[in-house]
Length: 221
Length: 221
DNA sequence: CGGCATCCATTTTGATACTG
DNA sequence: CAGTATCAAAATGGATGCCG
Image (cartoon, rainbow over all chains, first blue to last red):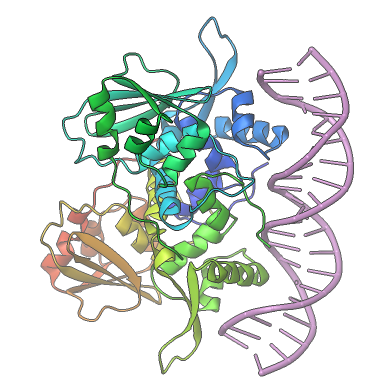
């Protein structure tokens, strides 16, 4: 497998030796929001063959970036989680994401897949620590049949797969509407009024959500 | 060429569609320190065939991340420079670099190549804006037959290829010694005493250099 | 030197069929 | 559902030759 190396004594090159192959950083992106099962990863990584997925997971495991665990009962099914080293790739993935949001996004193409987790993780990318100074709030997002939550505390935002313990506010919507939000075509307030987004819990908190992000305007290359 | 896409409406995936192929991010790393000629790039990217290098440059050009320019007289030779969009990949490259410095560096392997520019760019990665608040200083580094400079101003460090206009201090050393520094085996002060590094110009400024960086201790995966 | 084209051996990938 | 096995297609690398 991966014996192909750049052979450079350079931190960037050494990193890319480990995670620079096709699919690997996207696989890590998936795991950044929490442990996932093989099948879930497969669904999120359309086009990646099962053989390659298995090989990449094995590689990450061997290199100490991920570990194969068994979900606690009653699930008891195997799952993959990032190690501390793997999780620390988060800032690099988010940096790539910030660049893409500014220089490469635009409209969703016809055949592009979309998973709400990507948008939720994107919240971390544009989180504005100053705007959220001293704030402590938990949001739950239900999009289609997926559930995520975002916890804002100590000037950081943590986005994770799965329900929150005690969400302050719960926002419910569809995949398609979420795409419209990330495309910037609709504002959250507008969508709540129109009924495309349902809010329950602390409505004040929900309204404050969009004040925690600062995203530069998209630019063209 | 590159019509292979992840087909995901996700900023990270879109970015990797553009720069995720083999060599591309390392090519951008080379250009981050300033325009380079074809041959220089080739020397820094040992193992990359000329055909592939040409193809990647064309790709970056087509996508608006780099542009083919002609160096000002008397050089008058073609060179490649990053556009604004390309240069803004700097933070992502540095994020990968920071991860690698912590989790993947260790000793230099027997067959690994090394170019001083990588170490100089690495200074940007661990630059500590707080430590350099209000500081304005320019360093020139002469390593082997390469010259770089680093300009600290307005709380940022800019590392570039080529000589500085008016360096406050000039540090001169060899490739091998620079490797020892980046490996953390030797401190700068020690090397100056031993004569392995020569300082000219403002020696006070030179001594302050290492106070501008904050690098976490390496960890093992 | 700069840069492209061509040929070829080796890897990597993508897609699908298959097994426990 | 988790993962292996298999095979065709594509990407890579290395060498080499060419041309301005």
